[in-house]
Length: 563
Image (cartoon, rainbow, N blue to C red):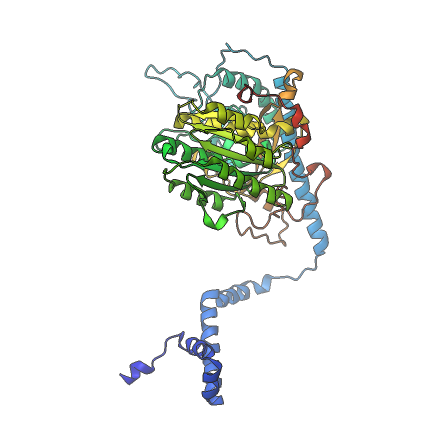
């Protein structure tokens, strides 16, 4: 029994010392510990610490490995500054080639649109990535599924690709024969020779693509796209970070959702899906908060009360979880929610915080009993620094004029969402509105995304290159008759795998990418791009430009905002 009591585990000595240090001063003063005992504890503690570190650090194995290769090792003096300089120059040259490839695609797309005449009765067959090589029961190729040669390519991780042609992917909720889709696909056929030419000029290029504002995604090299386990293709290029960052400037968003009793049932389901879809259009350059209102106003995350938080992945997912917990009850008081939202946005704007560019309120409700003109007069007029977008939930149109008036008189956009299927397309409209000043100015900002792993593309077999960054640029309509409308045609982009960048590193430079947002990337402040810390910033790389609100007076008046 005594032997068992005296047996000490490996952490006994550290715990005894910790307990001693935790004693109050008067207790330590009364406790007289012999010096030899303290020395004994120190020796035991040091021995145990050395044993644990040796066991788990692998230092003995490292020493053995070193001794095995010691006879072949040589000490060579190198100029570290020259080494890094050469690395930097090579990386800048590589990134420059990627930017030039994207710029050629932008020029080709805008010229093709300029020379294309819209034809509402256009009939045109194209390679649909979901249908290519599919045959019917009579062994004939299905419509939009003609023969499309696919061969394994080592550069694309031995995936089956077609390096002579691109093909078209569409999400399930977009009709593949819609006139707008057919005209866009036909127009963007002009990109095929540019894709091929870019790849011939720079064989290190990987995926090149054009994401259209109408929803189709032209991908080079062409692949066979696979649906998920439910037979659905949920991938929508307009929801990708590279598209959103290139299509709009950074933004501060306050989402206001009506949770009064009239929102019960399907309306609340649609409202929740609308919020989630808006969140999916935000990126790390954006800031957001969500307010729910009925008899009173409350932030769905109390810890974020009165502030905006960065719309990074963690915060977006946290908001989505909280949105699912919302329940409808009580009576709606829109004016208090609007007042709170305007105050938050003004405070952040005056303090120089947030995205420092666009600010907007998203009002999701099944009706507004008045137009709340007094609130807008006090907090938003005459400058109208905050746009207000309104989403009328349900089929009821009794209060539609008020909801529409709110959007139209605050440089926003009004839309009605009656079903879950309507959500995606209607939410995307706000991006078109926010992009108008940039489009009118023709600000072709080059953006580089943070390092990421595109799980959506990976699942479709279009991507297995692990961590990457994307360089992207917006594509605008240059037609004189639509220039004042600020029409965004889409975004072109190209992926740059980090492993391609690491290949440039000299053998004496060890680069350890610790995480998707870690080394070797330097994350600059919000609304700026990300560049490698060793890479000088060429003048044409520019920075994130805020679309000037001074051009808003030139904006085309959308029918959704005209009575």
